[in-house]
Image (cartoon, rainbow over all chains, first blue to last red):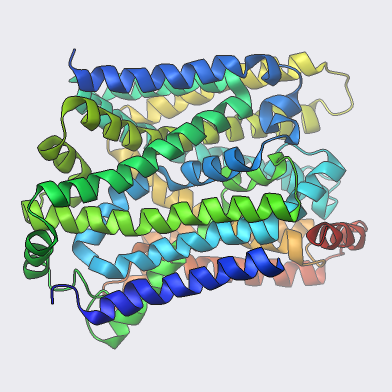
Length: 30
Length: 498
């Protein structure tokens, strides 16, 4: 595999999930 | 002339037309010229905010850094995402409410009003440091744009810098803040198109994901390492240093002054603005990384990885599409320089001349607008002169960005969330932050503290801001809190929940 799983999970997935949660919070509760 | 030059010229003509179209509105008053009478709609406010914040650093600097530091660089992008998030959720409503109450047009006036300063010391210290740092920053942007234009037009760096300055001057002079904001919006969109199209188009045309990324991974073992590589200490310093790039952003007057200009501060406006602005940063973060990785995978190690975008455009795109992509690079640079020009003019003419030297004398709004406009000419001339020698001005950008951040980030946070801020505390923070930035860099203190590690230069701002904050708090604690502090805090808290 060229791109390791950790790169997908932590370098991309984790911050995207955090960002998605922020947007959800903002549109629901801000 | 070839098609690429025509495409770039067409984009310049669009900016100039936008400037002239905003001319009637801009000449009504100093308020309309400098902050568009607080009537900027959400889309223009959010996109222009990001366009002027990103500068050439995203299309050149981050791309180059990604091809060497690898995926670890994306933490600087995520740090930058925090900027619009806090700008819009914390600062926007508070700064707008405060600005409207005191009818202020500039960053220095905002600080003076909030701290209730009666003597001119804070006004002078704040305005002078903004003028110095912002002019140096502007000059570095002109150099970056000049280098691109010199390549495209085949002229020397000095005339290219002068052309860049003249173009920016035309639409800033005529259109004022609204003209600049609208041009910045177009430039922001162009910049995003460039950042998205170039890496993906080049990857497909260059042989596909497996081939390009396989090459990149074999040439740079840390290209897909989210920690940036090295031992645990190195990884922590890389990630913290990359995140720290966001800290000076809140101290940049050309970003924070935008909050004075927004049309509304209700939930609907803020939600839309923060979504668009933060999404631009997220997309730019990963596209810049992709661009660096694709350039590495296709060309191998470039002599100057910061020029990756030029190599990719030259290799894969024809003159018209390539010209459009180069417009995106130039747009990123122009948007920052134009926004800064107005800030310097506002500080000189409004903060220093009308609100201090000529305070109390009746001056017509037309005269104020005219002086603001005329002031742009010597400012631009100085920036062009500083940048005409070429690369040297780039050195100034570190002092300008980190210096302004260290000086003003603690003050602007205290301004909106801490009742105890005094004018003496603000002055202490501005002076300490400025001096610390220069001293820390000259003495290479980060390298002295961490001799075995490679620490990103953005890390330096952490101790500088920390020390400036400590000075601000200590001095504010031992001096008298302004009488208007309680009332201002109530106003800002109420503005938060409309």
